Structure formats: C-alpha cells, structure tokens
Image (tube, rainbow, N blue to C red; front, side, top):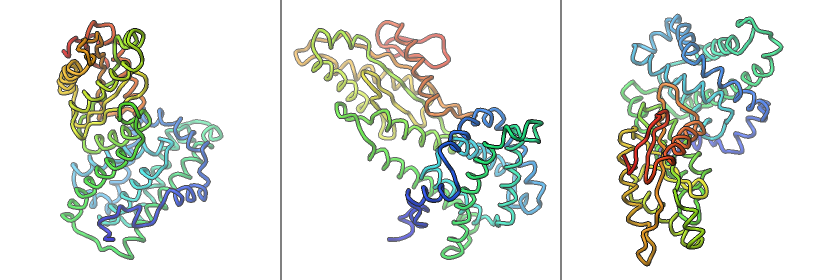
Length: 376
C-alpha cells in the first residue's frame, strides 16, 4: 500500500492499543483527564492572553521569528494554538487527538523547527499555564495546583513523544519540502480529514426506526465538525427540533402510526439536507441536524424547506392530514470562542423550547427573544 493511502497514525503503526499503552507509560489516568477537563473553563477565560503571552515570548527568539515570517502566519499560528489548548484541556486523548499531534510534529519538522526550538517552547507553555492555573507565578498555593500541574505535565510529555515520533519518521523516510510543497500537503491533509470524518460517520450506529444516526453518533460527528469549522473559519449551525402534537397521534391512532410520522420527518430531513449535513434522531420525537458551512440566515431557509417537505409526508395512508408540526431551534457556532458540542446542542434545544410556544411550524434562534412561525 502506498504511503499516500495511509494517514500518519497508520504509517507510524499507532493503534488504539498503542495509544492506551503510551498513556499507561506516562501515568495518564482518568483522574488526570478529569482534572484537566475541569480546568478548561479557566483556560477558556484566559485563552487569548495565554496565546498572546506564548507568542510574545516565542518571537523573542530570532530563529523562530524568522520561521514565522509574517503577521498573517502569526495570526494563523495563534488560532491553531488556541484550538490546541482547548483540546489539551478537553480530557479526551483518543485517536483523533493523537492524529492532530502527529500532524503538528510533521509540519514543524518540515518548516524547519528543530527539537532544540520545540522543546523549550513546550517548557514556556507549561510555565504560562502554571501561572494561570494557580501556581506560584499567579500568587497561589503551589500545593493547591500540584495535582493539575502533574496531570498537565503528563499530557504535554505524551504530546511531545508523539511529535518526536514524527521527527524520527521524517529522518527515516521523508525529505524536507519547500513552502509551496507544504501548502500542497496542507490542502491534501484537509481533504483526507474530511474523508475520514465521512467514513467514521457512515460506520457509526444508527436509529433502527428512521435509519438516521443516533445521539451518540451525532455528538461524535459534531465534535469533528466543530474542529473542522474552527480550523477553516467557516460557519456551522445546529438545528434541534421536536414534533408538536405527536403524543396525540400515538394516543389516538396507535404507536404504529406514530412511528410512521417519525419516519416521515426523517425522510423530510433526508430530502431537504445536503450530503455534507448531519441529521440524527436523538430520542423520542426529537431530531437534530448539523449544518456545516451554513449561517443562521441560510439555516432559516433550510427550516422552511423542511417544514414543507414534512407537510407533504405527514398525512396518513388514507389521506388524513395529521395536525403535527415541527418546532425548531437554531444555534450558530461562535468561531471566536467555539462552544463545546454539548453547549451548542443545549443552546439549540433551549431555542426549540421557545419555538414550541408558537402555534404551527416555528423556528427560533438561540439568544433571540422572538421566533417566527411557518418557517419564518
């Protein structure tokens, strides 16, 4: 098999078992992961200051300043650093996290960042985070911050080992490429990530009644889509919907007819959404849809088309038009401070409950006090 048909994890033979073994060797425990996840709010609060302080330090080194080269590149690096810090304190260090660290090592090696520059940068980052998380630099009690700093050190060393794996791999089988080649590689990498994301979505478990992905599959996909949208700087909107009048159908016509109504909404979603959109049944008569590359205005247009598609399918086989409507809430990803998947879903869910106060089909945006009926 050609190396271009494999991702970095496959080339380096880093499997799920190997990841678990590495974490064991570094002493990374579930308690460590939980500690870092609990510290995420503090990091998010000071995220911009942490990133700015880190790069203010880095550009003091002439070799690093020369490698960065210009203001646009520095801005991109700051964005990637912010994304990394959120992942670092995400408490989840799985195959997706590992693959991102391998990419970082390969890219740094190709642009000429040697280990003698990379390792001190990690030390600087650790010192900055120690100060922000209550260490001596912040005037706090060292004993209070010791457990979280130990956990952070373990994960940073875990990350460092992955980065060095790519340096070693490059010495064995790769040569440095120029800037033009690096840009070509980055474009190919984005395509490969998108392909892998689609493959994982297809393999995920589905709701047996509607054929749509279930709640667990939705959140696995949503995490990846948020990461992708953040890196690309593209909009993303989540829709959360619920059927009004569904209980009366179950009570008066039976669960078989209720199941048919759920299938009708699922078919309406499939007919309305694009191939890259992610519909799901999250439980009962509640459905979701993740709309990559779509802002709130365009999402309202999608909702209007969905309402019409559902109306065309909701009637009974005998032609009785059931009084079942859709309440839909919309929440947009904040690219400046990306929400966690659960937060984005909660915002859309809360907007949906406000939509239920409106008679008929209705859509309400998160953070908005008003909504509109009949698709707005």
